[in-house]
Image (cartoon, rainbow, N blue to C red; front, side, top):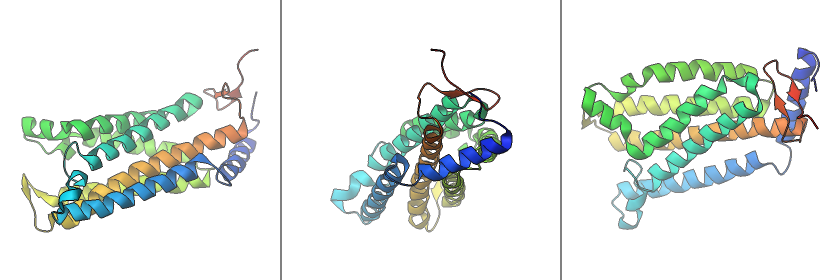
Length: 235
């Protein structure tokens, strides 16, 4: 089933995107839950830095504790939802590398692979990962263009990128080699929270796109082909 001309397709997706955020929609619920949990980790993470014993499991920069696990789950959810959008809209292939990178980052979060690579090579992990970040950045912009007609997507997608970029600047400023710089905690806490917020924003952005697609055609068997047309499965 064709969506018509490019102009009509744009208008249709825009209307669907507006409808997708109007009432009891999953993206809104997910956003509220994520913000509540991130706020909780902000409070407990601050208490952990004050050496409150009950809050130590929520230490923001500790490996394999609450914050790291939660951050990894957010990355995994964002990554899988991004891959899910690609499966529904094959012409939106630009989102796939972003989804793959987010899933990889989820694994990296719980395994600390970047630290192992840095220790092995002697090269800062941010430098090692720079090519992957560059590719993801280009794909991010292509995805932004693809789904620009959906206002809620634009805001959350861009917010996710801004949060992650700022967090990585803070990550870079925290360290002098392997030595923590003055003001480490003041930079580490917002860095970790911005990473969580960025991942949550990517997740919500992809859920908004899925919701817009479902508003346009609720049949889960419908997929977009390489020309941007939605096709129903043969009866």
